[in-house]
Image 1: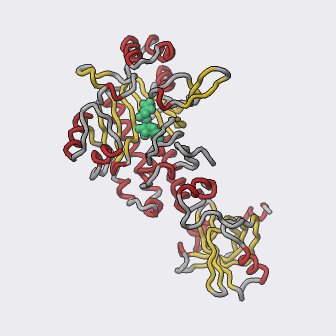
Image 2: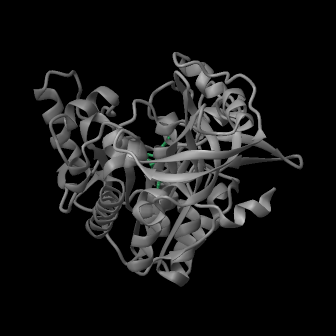
Length: 438
Ligand code: NSS
């Protein structure tokens, strides 16, 4: 069967080189996305990995057996079709294939996802739901986001590293740790690869990783997953200002790349490509203090020292076209590793990047404590045990240097770029409070 596919033509090629293929017989292979009938004329929209093309079969013009097979074929059946390429202004994309032969490879059972299927049904059948046009577009854009992230880091001289996913102490506090039994000892799934990147900057200076992070988030929100993809970076000799510049360049590059490559796809998702193309440096920077003032002015009840939730982030970013950095939070709101500000040690040299339109925080980062005694003091202040962080403290014993880093939530970035209601649609097989299958 597969030998016939040696001369297979991809759907994208038909659209790109249609005039050259006009009148020629081609072999295409894929899945029946849709089937329609107009009297004695049957249409199949055939999907392959590169696009969807219309195939037509007229009862009087194709052999009886071929027409019977078209009648028989069901939605999402896999087929190998032969046919003649022709221009047709009415066909989506301007070309269609006039069928001459059809081989049904896998006749599909009745498709279990009705047009009005609810979210739970769609995500119970995510393995099938992913074939939908919108989901396919999102997955393509997601792949480009990963490509653009790697692209930028490589061009800017960062080295990709691979940290462990099984770890022994918290990075972002104990409340969201997934605990596991590790041959009779306690271990956790990583919340962030930051500490491992901090270890590797001593030899490589500028490192990054693209890896999952795990958070036992009990909250049901449109921006929290329990397993999410984290682009993390760490650099020796950089301060908060340096790392903030890195972050805005990275986000800007990803946006330019996606807007350029996926203009039409973004439009289909309801996102104006220019919105994304306009995400260029510099992004605005304000202090946490200023952010609280702005939010208060918009009528929300919040005081200096309170954390910002979704409502506050929405108020802060409504009307903005670009992400905004909120710098220097009170130390009580942040993890122990952040460097206290030398002129005001009640705040830390951290920076969060908030996406516009209320999509929320996409990056958390800042400058780290590089002095051993200060670090131990902060660990104790947070009621953590210095012995759990022995190796991390070691990094301050042997040639410590000022350094900074950040973590970008890739799924949140994809959600914002694609204008998705919920983060679960940004990742192939989402994991959240109420879902760990399929
Ligand atoms: O907790 S963070 O704010 N910061 C860290 O984990 C640092 N240790 C990273 C670093 O400096 N290397 O998380 C960073 C980002 C945050 O801004 C979100 O975009 C994303 O990770 N994030 C999440 N995305 C999806 N789901 C959940 N639950 C989630 N938690 C954080």
